[in-house]
Amino acid sequence: MINGFWHYFISTIDPISNLGFSRALPELSISALPHWWLVVILPFVWNVLPTLILWVVYLIKPTAIRPPLPVRPDHAYPLVSLVIAGRNESATIGQCIRGALLCGYPNIEVVFVDDNSNDDSVAIARRAALSAVHRNTAHNAPRKRHHM
Image (cartoon, rainbow, N blue to C red; front, side):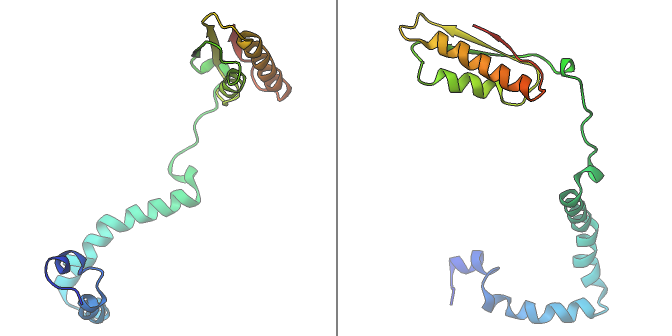
């Protein structure tokens, strides 16, 4: 049994508090009381039901609500330049560059700026860029630009 301050907030989920309403709801829904229909049912139908219908249609067939985006040629996409700065990043630079080049955006260039590394970061970056470009061209994807 809920009482006091919490009853005010939790009464909507308390089955004892809702018992009377749950018994009255079927009777009110089949009754001819005009205020019931004007106050409860009509605003629901007018405001909520169209939104629910559109949401369900969008879940089932999104192109019925929003047409698909037009297919653009690769040169129509703006060029995105990704600048990666690093020093002694040989452990992670390969994955970073491959991930950037294989992200799926068709018009991207990756610029790796090396800050006088002591390890083989530049060589790994070049190999990663070439392997990603080779993988994209093997799958008929557009060629990505890379600068080292």
